[in-house]
Length: 198
Image (cartoon, rainbow, N blue to C red; front, side, top):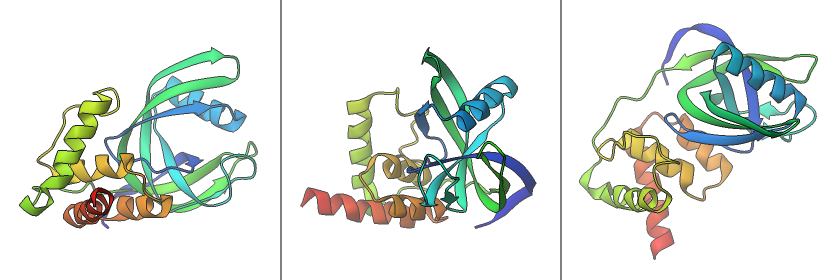
């Protein structure tokens, strides 16, 4: 996994979920530390990091995150009632956490480095099943969940989108995020799909 650019500070949102580059993730935010973080991100148009929780829980004492996470930006927001913020986020690139510190509010801030994007790769013929199933899922759910352009010929994009929507354990999703081999990721997902079909 190659790392690009110098380390930078990034506020971290710790969740029982994994978001993949290029994906969309709606969030319902109510904890004060995260409300403040999101308001700042909206005001400054800056990203924050989403990390899956390795130990601990989403609320209360800061949890321990997995060291690979994904930068996201707020694309839309609404506050239907006081103290609850609904946001839509668009995921950008991955990062690796080098160090963390907790602020007085309980917000975890990481010193992180960007991880290089995976280069596009063709989908091998023997893994076309994955593309067929993803096309079907996108037809079912529509474009609102899947940002255009749809890159069905790109193993990176297909693998990321399937990793998001398939009912996989959090630990498996995290492993798929950390991988830098798009064809291997697609191979793992195709094996999973075949087991569901049979």
